Picture 1 (tube, each protein chain N blue to C red):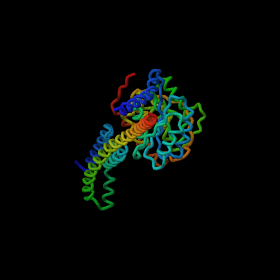
Picture 2 (cartoon, rainbow over the protein chains, first blue to last red; picture 1 turned 60 degrees about the vertical axis):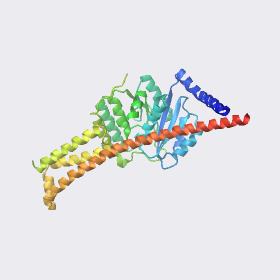
Picture 3 (cartoon, each protein chain N blue to C red; picture 1 turned 90 degrees about the vertical axis):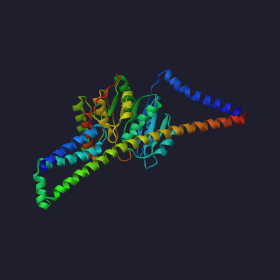
Length: 274
Length: 128
């Protein structure tokens, strides 16, 4: 009996210790943002990406979603947990589900933990600049955006991003198509560097495209009157690994995404509270 | 009704069916690309019957092509049902894997908390 009582006391103390920061967080409404890093075979690039994110101020948490990697991505991510100044969570999908499902796992994680304001998608391969991340969130807050994209093609940062000719054509084509169909100007619909506000990421928990999700999800937001915006960012070439969009698959990618966007126009609109 | 009109109708029906299922999110766009290609071929053959006639005359398969047409119809229906069930299965399995991954994460967290508690208990027990 005495032993049981002591266990209960220790358990209560531990719960109180854990509950205090959360309670404080709610009391002073310090917003916490979640950075989702979808990672497939990124064991080599992940440490430097996580290291660059350490410069962020408090209030950010990192989530590595290991998308059924064949290499040691999950192991590397778990080791990084001990070194990271910012809280780092690791979720491992049991099999490769694709980029859309990996990113959606991040939104599901945010919904389950319930306490995040913005959810930012950030590539694990190190091509996105961490210095633009706070600006992305700040723009969302200032302009009350539901989705803010880090664009490689907006002027203002002297962009040095290079891509294949076919891919550049594809990006321009999707930018034109989405702008034409929604009346909203977008310049980089394929960018995976994006910040989603609560209305957008809660909607993405229910529906998010499987493969090549960026242009389709952007179109969905614009069509359903969610507020979208862009800021200029600089991106580097991938440090290691292989892009999920290889040049040979670009044509298929363009046809598939175009079809998805055109058919999405015929789906019923969803209403969001303003 | 001649074969050309039948093919045109078949092509249009294939278009409508594909569109309807993709719109209802029962069919992935990945499969829809292939099915819309089949529908386009059917429509083209219906609009330009000389294509299939030329093929039949050149290959000497004037009558068997009608049998082939029926067989294609059956294969179409069968394969489309497979695509539909694959789409549903894929959605279910992805959601299951996501749930599994998140539950594993939560279990790991609980295990860590439990071992911390056990450690605390053992330490205080030793001190007592």
